Image (cartoon, rainbow, N blue to C red; front, side, top):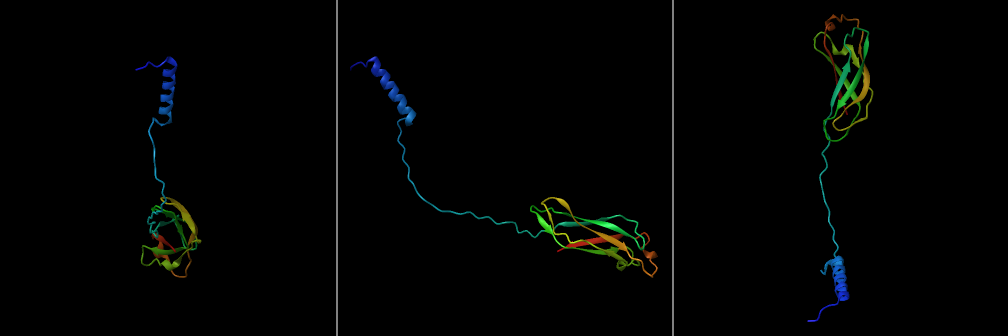
Length: 149
């Protein structure tokens, strides 16, 4: 077998290194293709509810009124809109008539973020004067309940 010259050995080494750098002498092959596909997921059913609160100061007397603040707590995982607010009044004493009180609420249409509590409106609670004796309301607990559409 014949010996390689120094120049031939260097040329062979460079050629081998280039072959490794280019792809190690391995051959690659692949197929091309086309395709289609899709994915689906079901959205939240929504329509959950928020918890509404009415907050106001006590100490009402006939002929007086207090401001009412309305808030909503949204425990759902998506935002929801609170619509028109409708307040109703009740008392804890039979002789203290709910009809002696008037509660108002401005229309809200406020977006409440998921997991948040937000102000959704304001109004007033009025203890209306009556020609009737209203002593039954002394010390009575007055509750303003609120609903939304």
